[in-house]
Image (cartoon, rainbow, N blue to C red):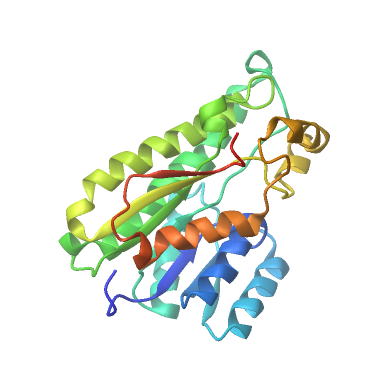
Length: 252
């Protein structure tokens, strides 16, 4: 990304956890940040205030990333509020309660794929339309949040979630090669067991804690550690990196 490229970044699911940490690290690195949230406006306002305290602009963007129309409106609002896009972090994602595949309904699986995969595709589409030199843009970077679950499969817990993240890995690789000559780099980050509330959401907090001894580094990771990897991949320091998947999983 050259020096004239806008430093405007959109982060989906940015009101908490890894998304919020990415917003703060990105602001420290000089990005203005669009903070997408679904329901928790107070949490999004808190993150926006922290970004502004770091001297950067911030805007809050309410949108359900399972809705194509909501995503399109979100990008249009970002255009008006902060200006031309320079980066996207596809972070929004959901899990469901722990279950075996033979216990999962089609509705559950469809819900996860709509948010975690279809939403990421549509966000990537809108970002490419704005950043690609083919469309008159000035380039940029996309970072997709995957998961170590894509490699491990998460048997007996949430194979459906793992499958959505495997799809994100393929999106990352394919899109990176598709837009490599159009000024856009696309990379992925695969977090392992990170100390966020996603484990409580799936009812897996206790199990996550018991798995710590399976991690070579013998601890859970932090949202900030994932955010540092994301911001590196957005930066000029990663200018020759595209189509890569960076594991932030403690060696697991």
